[in-house]
Amino acid sequence: MLMSQFDILNLKHIHREGNVVVDILAKESVQHASGICTFQSPPSIVVEALLDDI
Image (cartoon, rainbow, N blue to C red):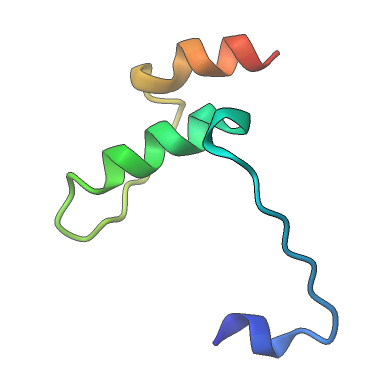
């Protein structure tokens, strides 16, 4: 497991409301067979959430 390769590890739970962009992208990835999506620029589904984060 990746976490076991680190001497010191700090995990912090962030509620969905605190990271809307990640929540949107996670929901989007479920719709893909591999669960992996790559983007060259922010997809339109997250642009508004990104702007709200500024």
